[in-house]
Length: 83
Image 1 (cartoon, rainbow, N blue to C red):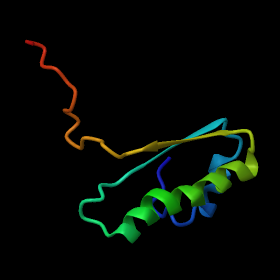
Image 2 (image 1 turned 180 degrees about the horizontal axis):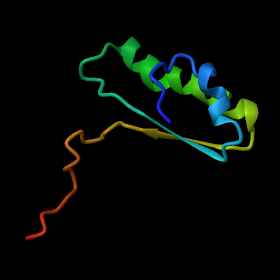
Image 3 (image 1 turned 30 degrees about the horizontal axis):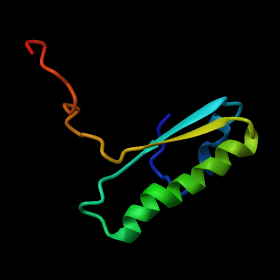
Image 4 (image 1 turned 90 degrees about the horizontal axis):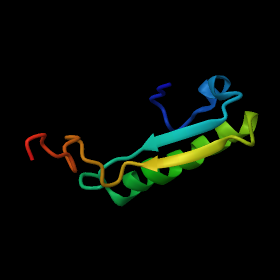
């Protein structure tokens, strides 16, 4: 599912009900952000999400998958077939 307002996940809490796991993937480059913005996105949003998931299903696994070091071109580590 996709939700654009990470500061509040309560509106989609019903869609998370009964989930066995939540793979929470969120990340942003710190290059163009202030420390406060980077912390809000990577730390605060995660802390907002985990209790919403746990509220309806406290035994669900909550896996945070950071985007740090991700390659937006999706080319890092790939080898060309001719090599």
